[in-house]
Length: 407
Image (cartoon, rainbow, N blue to C red):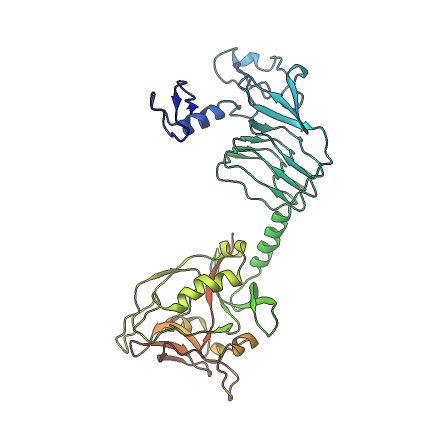
């Protein structure tokens, strides 16, 4: 059993609403938590009419012209000694409601810290410069103060609870080994919160690299097996088109050999096994989680074949796709530009190579002249609309995708 935070009635542990007063328990508790902090500067409130940190008027009390002369007691940085308590490695201030503000560490040399439940705020500079590798924060934490974790240069792991609402200036700055993402619950973020963290450095490097992408250029993104070794290599891509915030790319080489569909049946791009493989196994093999977030979901429209009166099928929403016959003609400036050699890995998996040209045949997503055929690009670069039987295993795969440039 637990107690309703509004009416103090006894309710079951799993209850979301009080059976007596009907209050939404989680929402009520969140609102109560918000009321504990100044809406102007985020400092904890002591129950008066003014914030003791910035003098912001909460309600009632002295007129505005008396604010500047008000003598505010010390805030988070210098708690009154009479209510200071030490929880193991931490120095904390206990509040009237039983929650705590963590103001500092008694020992900054530990490699791991677990902040106790009941801590709702971490004061300015509380962990600054400590030796921690891992820090565990409690559910219910509402505020992280300025420079709270600044210059924790060995810190690599820290969980950020979904309850967090306020993050102060430089809270995680100069944590050179840290890569973090703030949750959507955060309502106020200070300046330079993640400055010089590995996450920000990587993001800046990626942003600088993406800014160099231009139509007709060659870029690297993701990694995949490309030779006989067990190691993946960076994938090279051709930039086919660039818009303000995203770019269309296609692999420079044929990366694998795969049937359009594993069985010889009537099939469209929507239902073929190659689409499933590209957006499942290949996606996970070729791209990290962060890289996958950069890949835009694209509505792939596969036009009908007017020449052979074959349906292109329903539109699909894909991360990775094959070009259609129209796109293969649109995005390449010449027949020769469409010619594509396979990697050693693709060739080893069965990709056929023309003795005459040294290039492969690669699939397109458009329908062919028969219900069990799909279009492809011939080794000489011509687009073959009549297509091939879908379960041919020796045709190569050349993935295409749109990448967000302002991720």
